[in-house]
Length: 258
Ligand SMILES: [Zn+2]
Image: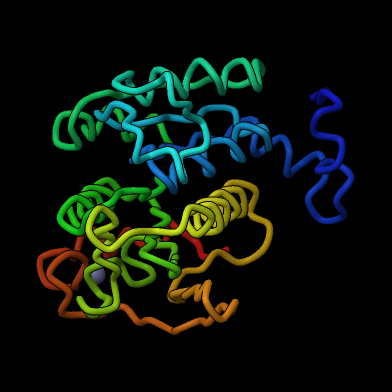
């Protein structure tokens, strides 16, 4: 496979190389939520050459988005986020395919759609939708990279279904509420976490490095520190616990932790 020179700084990386770039070209990433996290994740995945990127969001742009949703401009107000992002990302990298889904999570996340992707990024902004996405990814055995932000803080973990812990395995208090409308968020903070989500997806697709399964990364923008908290799979977890999920547990070798 011949790669265009736009990827030359990646192809030259020892241990990534042409094989890594080829894996990205074949890779398919679904970004659920095109807000502060989804914007930078989409931009960097497009720049890195991920062959197929799905964008799922039913919202339109509002002025309060603009401190962190860097794909959008003031004159985009009331326009569809996924449509604008598709246009801009396609111009930015015409070598990749951008698919859009502008329905609610319930309408969009069907098995047919999930089958089109290798990995899902949780770039949502509320806990009920995150837990719904967590369950759907478990049901359809798709790995999911969770990212969350609030004020100056961010967090991230990668979920490998039935191998590592899922979002429900974490104690409820350890997942950010992400109530940014009420509590606020500093624009660059989702930039940090969204880009880290893109790196997780790239590692998963290429098999290079270790994804953050069983590890919760916590970013404190005030002190400028990253901490890592080990998290374990809960055998009694209502979403991924052994009870009632024997078939899926038996299937766990489908996934490998990189
Ligand atoms: Zn679980």
